[in-house]
Length: 300
Image (cartoon, rainbow, N blue to C red; front, side, top):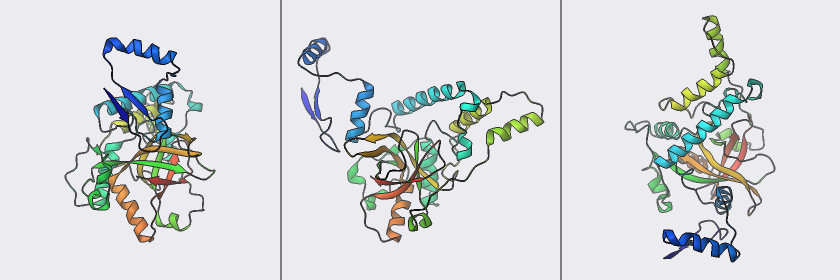
């Protein structure tokens, strides 16, 4: 049986899914290659998914067990690489207000925005959430019924400044930011939690290894699902990008990710206050290594 593969964004990467018996796979594979088909790997498949705007499984399905395992694996690999770097070559994420640089804390973000948007909402599952993938439910009348969910979004930058990568975070602009969107927005310098912790250990004459304290604090923060996170920086955290790069079909940097439903409702309320009728919303983005915010367009 053969089924047509439907694409959401454009026709790039469209084709057919061929389902074959196990013993037929090699024969068809060789025949297709000899006929001119070009086999690709996971890297090329990710590039095709980025151009089409499709979300990949499992890395972009954070509400599934496979997605959680994938995120934990990537976090472990990046944390191991980070710990092996010399202390002078490690970026100090704490100075930029980034508590968990290697994994978006989705459960914390969803819970914080559910409380922020509706203070009377007391029954909140802080560990499990869901992604609202049904586009027919993404209407203003139905959004308020899904405060414990994430919304798939797409981000794009039309200007010359700013980049979008897999470490980009999405923030909510203030009303002052929207009034003067040409000014440079910079995150204030935060305290170095690792150095403060090392000074405490030195004062109490405890042994420690310089540079390892930051790794320990990052691990502790990633495992803490109860602590609030959206107010860690000067701008409220909406969500994060799971896949970002330059998109050749649009000639600009784009990204795919998720934001909390409560944050999206707050963003829409800002638009209503300004009496703007735009299909895309303006948000602030920032990579984990930068203190500078950049403007971007958000679509959901």
